[in-house]
Image (cartoon, rainbow, N blue to C red; front, side, top):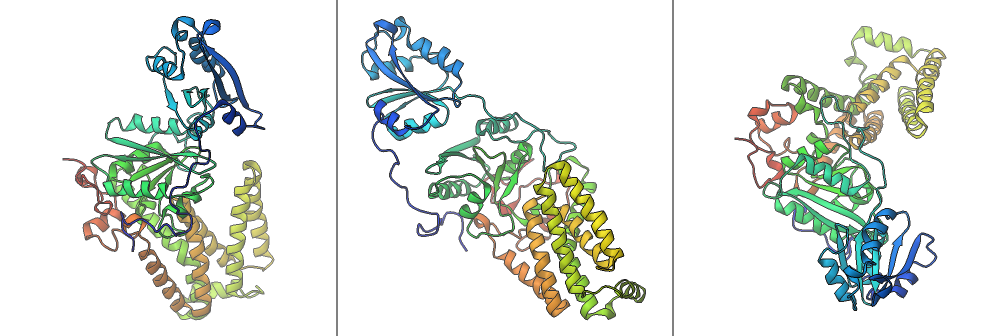
Length: 505
């Protein structure tokens, strides 16, 4: 198993050594215009520093729509064309020195000496004053994107009502408001040769294991992709072993992101994605919700136990029904067995056929409800669940018991806080049913053992996926399935290997 710090070999798919720049050479007005040729939103205007009596002329370049036009005119063009400010500049270096003395009205600027860096700043919403061999880029990004809204997939009752947005800098500000300490570090990288997506690695210095942040940064730096557009690009390339089970936590809530950083995890924010990603994830953590800490420990413990019960029912209930009714009828109470036999007398399909058919129908209804608009999706769910299902039972096509078993398995799957975990359980549900059809209870037990063995092979960033169930003490196991009173949880999770193990005195 690979541990933190070992990294991956460069010969692996998607991992390559650093490549040469896409656009070599110094910034030149002609080269920049040639690079953005056939781009209808590219603008380039000649600008004489110091106005009509100025000695130095440059080319002001920007991408229309990405920059704030008012900011470009008021904070860049106006001060640069004033004679008393920039009239004495004769060479680009003198202009850069005057800009460094804050004689222009903007809050951020950069001096660029390569064409690639200048082009990257333009695509990020900056305007560039380009001279032969040197460019000055100014932060004039337009406020694009939606505002902070309530989380949609992670509902909150007693917590904060804010969620991440697609704007990277807005997301970092939401976290700074919750963790107001200079120990919160943000290492920024650019990933994607074409998309040039800004990615931030977040951790708390002196608390998070330093090897964890370094390993994440090392893997990101070796990542060679055309573009970073969705979560799959991160999960399949950053992790040692791709799996349907979530090995990183994805959350849209800044408060949960901050809570996990305080536990000792490292986080990732990606420009354009309204999610925060946390490393590493464990099975126990995917069954936790931030509301657990906002509720009384007894209530939170009962709800956590219900989630574990729902996990087992979602995976095993259809398989158990198939195994018992096909191979082990003696295990069913007599009255229940007579009821099952009576309901199946006129059904033309076998137990295995109708169970698998109902599972497939349930997945089709769920997929249709997700893909259609909200109002139509609700209508499809009502038609499928009530009209079609009831009609199928009355027509003796399927038995009522199978409908109940599949419905219970589906509803328990919806209780999973993590949607990736719910999707993985749906796959396991089909596998368990197929094993039960062939081998009965023996096949179901074999399936459980294979599933546990597979989960034991997952070690995201050197942390066992089944921690603390496979390597923890009894107290740590109880802490994973129950919510202990907060004054008694004085230490952070040991399997995260935090640099500061104590969370309170």
